[in-house]
Length: 534
Image (cartoon, rainbow, N blue to C red):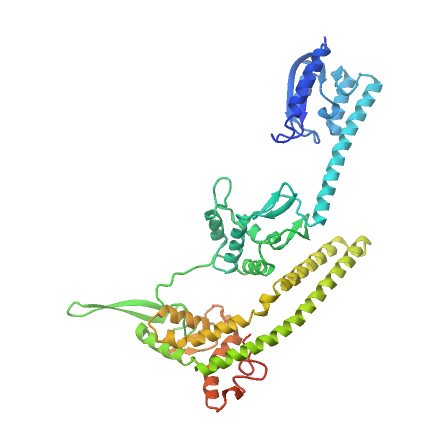
């Protein structure tokens, strides 16, 4: 009597897919065996695809047959046994050698005859063709989704895969966190490790409840998906999902990533005026506390500001200065920059006039941007046609395509932020004039931190303490000159504006009509002659 082994298989081990496949096969095969008086010595179940060889349960089945434990196989259909040429060929070979004398299928006829083996080969060939076609159809569907601007994969952090619309939507819970991460890193005050800890504080961590590794954080910060594009198969495509951040913020993050290859050192400033002045030798001014004990036992504490003397080649001879005296001299220095109310009012009026002129210029730029967008669309079509005609190679096509998409995204963002960009220089200029108007109030107060912040806003790190006197002097970052190696936080155009403002105001006030002073108000705007404050 022939002994058979029942074999049932489904293509996945995921419980929510093909839930009834195994149970349905077992019920049908058991009933078929009873109805046809078949002897089943064992049942073997496998949850694995048959597209590739190497199934452990199937290999065990063939081994048992070779060892003589059974002479045949009971399965629902030949495609349950094999969907690849290796496994299918091995079954046919065992039939040829007599190891398998019978294959029983409720839905397929087989006998160990030349005609039966031919039909079995046809069934295995159809099964392989089905799998190959399914793979090709799946790839074609993915390519179609890409052409429609839909990312064919798992949505990144901050987005969700909508099972109903089959699209990617913004995750309202984590999207604000992603935007905060980009803004924080763009500020330059956070390292990748600190960003990882920030994500953990917000509840974003690995399955082991550990912070993200630095590579994963960097992948988030370099993913173009967050500003509207996405990568697929080494190419950049334009997505139809809603961006979480603007491209300008993304570009700023990329610049910070390139510029910063080490951790940012956030040094704690223990004294209010530290970090404001340079010494005449180029080093920074630091502070130290001194305690004096009188003969009667009274103790007095003083704060002195002096050169940090970190240079090994320059011997600084600048004397130290007590905090009270430095406070008074800094206040006098700031008061020299306080303009009269008439000057402030006139500059504000001219500011509004220039803003209107700037608005007209922006309208012209907007028209040019819209024309460039239309030109890019034409270039994209020509580029694609050239690639189809094989006039250019694939690498050139991909590089030019990425370049056009980046340019298109930048122009689209410029148009979207058009109204805000019209005021991009007006508000900083208005705030600058307001800061000048607050000089008197702050300079006459005793708040050292407010004075320091005001000086940094006005002059950046261009203040030097020379002969115990604050002096405004342009600070160069020239390594060849042997000076201190700190970057200037203010552009040099700002420095020239601030350094001449005091003398310009005094000269203008000597005239009868302040508005006719060519140094203060040229015909083109509110900025001093020969310099641009925009």
